[in-house]
Length: 318
Picture 1: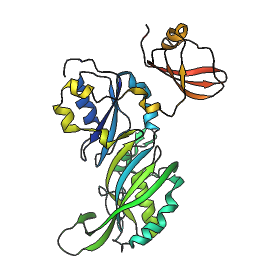
Picture 2 (picture 1 turned 30 degrees about the vertical axis):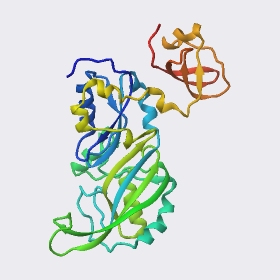
Picture 3 (picture 1 turned 120 degrees about the horizontal axis):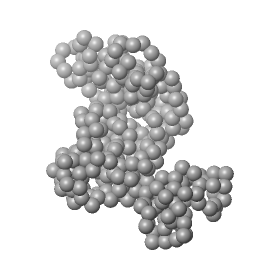
Picture 4 (picture 1 turned 90 degrees about the vertical axis):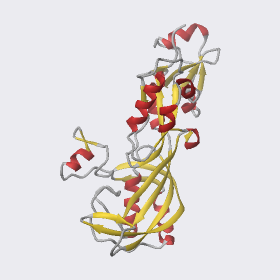
């Protein structure tokens, strides 16, 4: 691990490569910056890539607000194939079906915009009786995850292609030799809220068309204010100096731009940063961000029933 450097608390936007685990980015940041207090704000499956924000230092106290932020994905959906995991890792569940026409896919997409009831994939990280669902699935347990409410803001078809598919011992083969069937692949850009499973979305679109569908590939292109244009790759993170990476760290309050701001009086600054009760100066309830007279971000608190609660302090006492 590198020697500690003067790295501000904040968010480092990384780009997870397909095939890597999210923890690989966390470990690379810790090694580069010489800091143990680094955590990712929402994991990505090994077969997915894209934006993975890392919280550094006191910014870990704000991770929940990144987790709640809207997300954007580019998903390649393969039609005519249904698997046990809703992606290509699982076994094929039934004979391959004819693909729909692209226009049929386009016509069904509006059904999947808005507030939806969605069942997570059996091989997801959702906990069931204290165990991850994927662990129970790999152990051969038979269970059904309950549906949950999710929000999909928009879905747009952005590309299409055709591949050949075949099945060998319940495993899907793409563009292989021997008997095969052509299958439609549609690239979808999905804007959604927290907790939306894109694998489940692909499966449900396929069910609506009667042919089945599975997720072929997935890239997360944005999380809240962070996009791939902001991101440093795993390879670059491993070869960069602490000073180079420190320059890429975003201020912690960047994830709170849509939250009302409050100015703390000089005589209340230490009360705030030491977690003591503040006087109420607003009629507006909900989350607020706090700054001192010098513009230093102090933290956040929620206003309810005439008092401030759930303080998340970001600054040290003077």
